[in-house]
Amino acid sequence: MDYKQLDRGELIAVIGGILLAISLFLSWYSLGNRNAVLNSCKGPDSTCTGWSALTILRYLLLITALAPLVLAYIIVRGHALSWPRGELTAVIALVALTFVLYRGLLDKPGSPPGEIALDFGWWVALISGGLILVGSIWRSQEGAARRKPPGVL
Image (cartoon, rainbow, N blue to C red; front, top):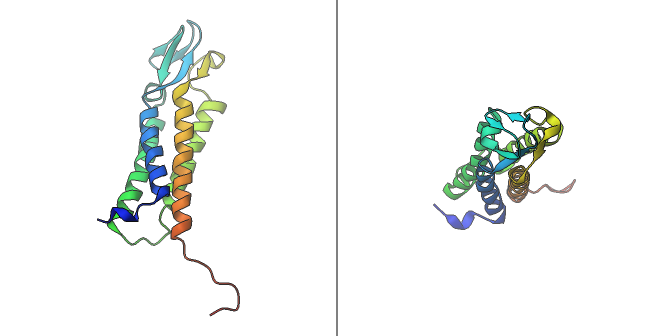
């Protein structure tokens, strides 16, 4: 195991993964009045964590949080891959960011939707998804084969 193989990209992605896992247990949504209901959370003036509010998406976000750790493990162990290292993690991070944006901006869970507002945990999840994406793209660009200009053998 060669820990010197890890660079800034993996460290940024791992920090993003840890923050994403933590964000699921922070409050994602705040409920406005007494009629606001979000799964087991009920208003007025209460909050609901990402774990309580999201049913299937919480497991997908946990898998996304593990992806940078798996990438770091692959790099430390020196495993050979058929694709550039970090590329799959970038795709997973992009899908997770899409889901976080969708559940926060376009289709908030609970009813009535006008009484459900975003809270601190959603912003942490958004930032951590961005960190995973940036870190994994950084790694995939460093590990990619350099292309030669035309006409050079």
